[in-house]
Length: 634
Image 1 (cartoon, helix red, strand yellow):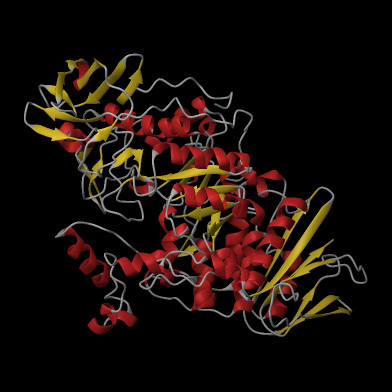
Image 2 (cartoon, one colour; image 1 turned 60 degrees about the vertical axis):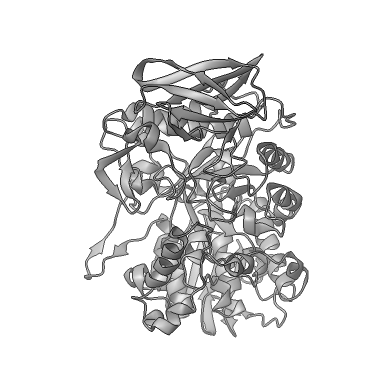
């Protein structure tokens, strides 16, 4: 185990010890709890009641691989809420797992600094043909060669059926049997560290899935009617017995750090973690994780634009490292893809708004009724003004998979525009995220897939299609019928990556582009790391680059990043053609070394159409024949 870990003493679940196994469960709803050990005949061992609704006991002769259930009040049998593995699925027996026997080789691993994060999001089941942890492990060299520094794995906690995005997980301590056994995940993490890759796990603490969640049978106070979320009653973080609920989720996160050596987390939908208590759950969770491992990385998905998410605890914040920021994606989707329904209606899709987003991470948002609102504007000098604390993307599982057909951005726009947008993403001062296959412009979509039993499965299929009824393209029932059925095997199969295509053009050229841009981000002093490492972003709204925006006619964004001894300027034309004047102090005329890169180089475009670059009286004139990006050093 890396030396900077605090010692781990799990308090929930089946904990293997010398000569047997200790069991402990929170079950205030029961007056008697027995552990039922599988066998012929089966063994029933009564657990001792502790205070606050806990039951515990040591059962001799129970070793790794033993299967068990809890029996409440002599009649109701359920899996362990803190089960380490569910070999028979969410309704089956839990398995005792030896978490200490794995031979780790990552003792020297120190992790990745938040400012060096280049995230690669993946879904284990759709990432390879095998759909397993081992399949991901075999592809780690490709991710490292790309230039990513961390993999962000969509939720792996046990879910119902054979396939799922993972946000329907119910056994939060148990890696899904669909992907492999617990040691298979440990092998993946160990190999990732050997390849120089951090591992972030996407975890869901805002709800349990609709199938196989038995927590309320043990303790109704896992939930509260005081708050509501899109999934029903909220998780109880501030009501009666909330201390034990909070402890359950915090222990879950600590378990992934200690038993699997995860480097940190992406916390799903933290706006649904409703907590009116004195110390917000997110602040407590982050503090606990940092006590375990000071460099544990914690990232939130949250749409509220709250500066306290990424403000230090010393300033009253919750001390997260970063937050997913969708504004850049939404603006680029609006401009490049023409999306204007749903939440895209709140965005103008202009290069001016894209520039503001790059400068601040969050955008000056315009509401649907025309009012202007800077939501969650950070105070001057606040860490929330650090662009590196915002995770930005062109694609992620939500923004692809929650589209009706699961189409990716590059499926609907011209390749030249996608290359220009890619340069903007990967050289931005924010933390970039790539979604699996994006680096070679994968032909496969990423669609919403499930494998729920009936009648829930039919309800999910019908609900998926009806939710798009308000969109113009799907108002016709026949059009909605063409939306892929989440329950169908074909929907999942269509979403699997086709790794063989990355060797063929034009996919190979797109892969080379991503590799080149990430190499620049790692090696150029003005691009190295995110903005907290000394870089700064300037876009057309900046006075020094205002002439770029005017000359571009609203079709280009200029991004400047600086370091003590170097600076670079990226000019990205996102649509159209025509000249752009770059001031001489930005791209020095006559300096042969000033031009570093263009997305229209023959290595990146199968039909290269490089812009012409000429000296003008007021700087450098770049004439684009189509969308593209040019990077200058000054």
